[in-house]
Length: 244
Image 1 (tube, rainbow, N blue to C red):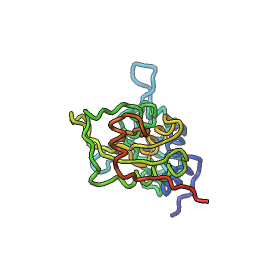
Image 2 (cartoon, one colour):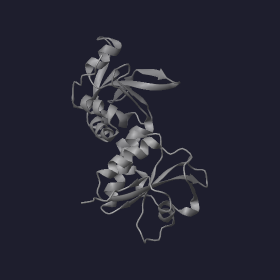
Image 3 (cartoon, rainbow, N blue to C red):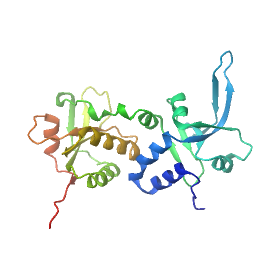
Image 4 (cartoon, rainbow, N blue to C red):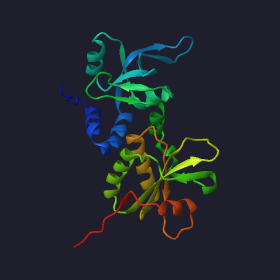
């Protein structure tokens, strides 16, 4: 049965299902939209606060709270008499930090939302794009299995950002083993770097939420051992010159 969107959030979800570049817009829409939650709101005993009781389901050994983009999606899943309440997504996620969610379970358009993914979109300013990497603290190597979903999506983004001249990829392994191995993307870019880095972080969080990512500005002639190491690798993206 074809999925027919009922509201703006469902339209964004439908586009994101087939277009990785639309996933950032979906998450922005999600955070500002009301959601229908399978559960109840009750007064918390001894206080004037409300207590949320949210139904959960199991998938691959993990618990997910059931949430929906429209009242009809919940009714199709659990029947019209299933208990429910409506709440703004941001308020729900702020109240339930650390929880995982299943958006529209058993629907043609749905998504599992993991706690780290939700945490990023609650506070995109916490992105790692502006931290300083030190070559003395990491071991950089070419990845054994390049993250193609990520690099393909970034290449599409870069083609639409004229200031991006080239992009490089290495894998970082902290010497203190404080983090798992993860990609480091270096970008030769002429423009507002903080905005570019934020766009890369947003897109990475949308298309590959399980991947830790560091982003480095590669500026020719600027002494930066990490950037120099990246620039010595074959780029996975190079802007093609316009020939007239």
